[in-house]
Image 1 (cartoon, rainbow, N blue to C red):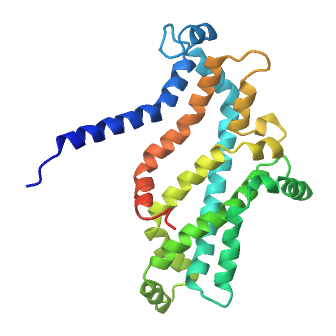
Image 2 (tube, one colour):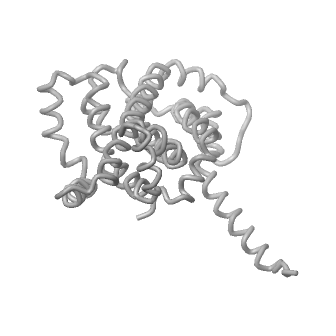
Image 3 (cartoon, one colour):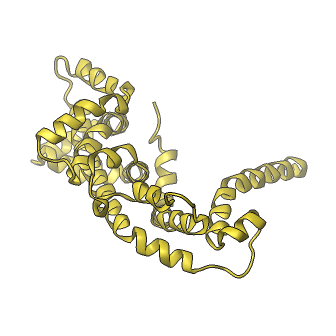
Length: 274
């Protein structure tokens, strides 16, 4: 019978607790400050202090509520299109080894090394020429295009590991290419889809430069830019500001809680391998 090394277990648990403390310290401080006014924050920045100013959340919600719905629409639309198009592209690179397809794949992958900020000027001119400036499509289309290289790279590695006999049997049964993707690839890659979906939603949720440049009207802005305006011009109301950040974090926390199983499973099955 294997003996338990209690010293090693204690050291391991202490290490995990320390990591958890650092991980949740930022969340605690955000919620802590969101319940205070500026005087309480100056007097006791680290500890909770009564009375709690719940009105900070009411003010922040009234200020940023429309921007949250804008962010949800852009983040989910971009993620769905990114995943769907990437699966189709990855299926092509994984299943159809034609002349030059491997070279084309690696040329495509080089795009992962290209910094998105360096592309802002030509992207702005293209968006303006297409008449998409100050619309959500000015964020969705570049977001979908920019995500393709990384997502295709991950899906292609996964699809190549699926036994080819499954696809051959499907072809014999008369299944089309889209049918093979829907009936074989999608069910087997749900954990990876969940992992990449969460990462894409978080990325779009935290996007700042694109919304700041491509959206002019404040009622169309995303939450990241709206929180910047919540800071105020002369005096920062730290409680209202942190209440806004807390509200903005809640949708991501809810998504992660419901998709945590898929997220962990996707990572363990090699969603980020390579």
